[in-house]
Length: 513
Ligand SMILES: *Cc1c(COP(=O)(O)O)cnc(C)c1O
Image 1 (cartoon, rainbow, N blue to C red):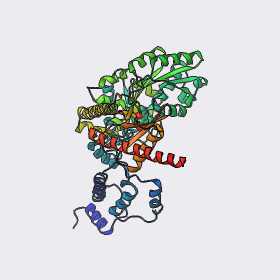
Image 2 (cartoon, helix red, strand yellow; image 1 turned 90 degrees about the vertical axis):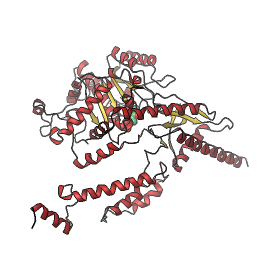
Image 3 (cartoon, rainbow, N blue to C red; image 1 turned 30 degrees about the vertical axis):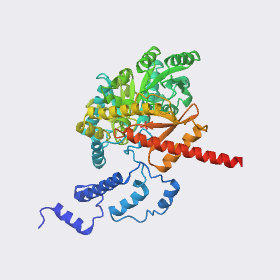
Image 4 (cartoon, rainbow, N blue to C red; image 1 turned 180 degrees about the horizontal axis):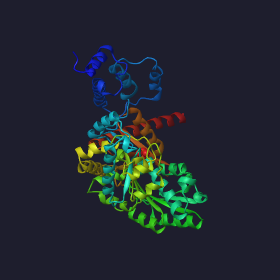
């Protein structure tokens, strides 16, 4: 009656509701398609529902819903589960794809990459070793090779996908530290830990560099104080004269410069440090040269603006964040070095995982180059993206973002109610609302605007401080954001600003009485 035992099995499962139906397995493919289908419909609903980037929900409003959840009671179908998740999450999730979301460095994502996510999680390869990934390892390697080519590295270069810019920056400083100890002090940190001289190691960065540099210095046992922050010039790029002064001063004090870190696209201003000059200074003082291009890596995609990154090829190591500027879902990042030999500094052979003889047999084990072990196959997202869309199309998106940001800068500059702080190399604009007619506490007013906008949720912007003063920030990463979106956002800013003035005058009246 049955063509095979398997069919018999499937029928029995169907009739009896198999206790193993949730396991990803060929017997359960209908269940798989059903679940994925339901979830994609829920995501579609999220797209249609969120007509503004944020609902304005507060933790106090959401917590009671979470208190009511009992893990002892499970859902018996996806509709019921998704209804719960809708209330707890998707109804209020911040919509990075919305054109009026211009707060942090969160890009809208491209659909080929999302489709890849389904495959990544389903097949669930781990890219640490060849014997857990096979072709996955080669896909990752080919994309690393491609990225190295975009940077302008030679064939000796190599790299690895990481969890984010923070981890990539950690690897840059880790290699800088261990390379210095190995080559100058003849000391192997991997085996023996930090040498006595480590407390004198110094890392030089712009004062506008990402905070992960300090955090990583502390994780590496060098302490946050090992990071020497160099003031920026008027366009928020590291000042080269001050850098060299600082290096000389530290040397005079008996300290040891081990690394210079350039930022290609600062988080706040999107400006690129003078990379060629940094390379020359780093060479002169024989330090490691790392470039944090977490944000600026998008410039690799566009011939029109690629020259902003000139000099990036001179770095020993580079951080790129595909999930910031390549329109990739979190997480997807890369760490690249100009010579693969540097990875030997961190390779550790485990007998059960990546024994030395694998290297001799030519089996590629990516774990040799990573500080993670089990690792997601994030590379597949970028593969889907580049193979479906190509570099130039992504580059066009990036061009649009840069050009829209430039137009917004002009718009803000022309408006006497605004004070624009910077011209961005990329797409981050720092400014504040400062209507000339009213004398009021400008910092407090802009803080009020930021908070009121978040609560209202119609448009999300970021905030930052320069010289203790509070400013608003637009970070553009969405090619769909238009000038008319920005006009609306400007109206919203003015509305809340004027509201602040009114409230403040009212309370001043109240105090007078
Ligand atoms: C965002 C950012 C980082 C950190 O990257 P994550 O992916 O968030 O870990 C590092 N450097 C710069 C310049 C950034 O903008």
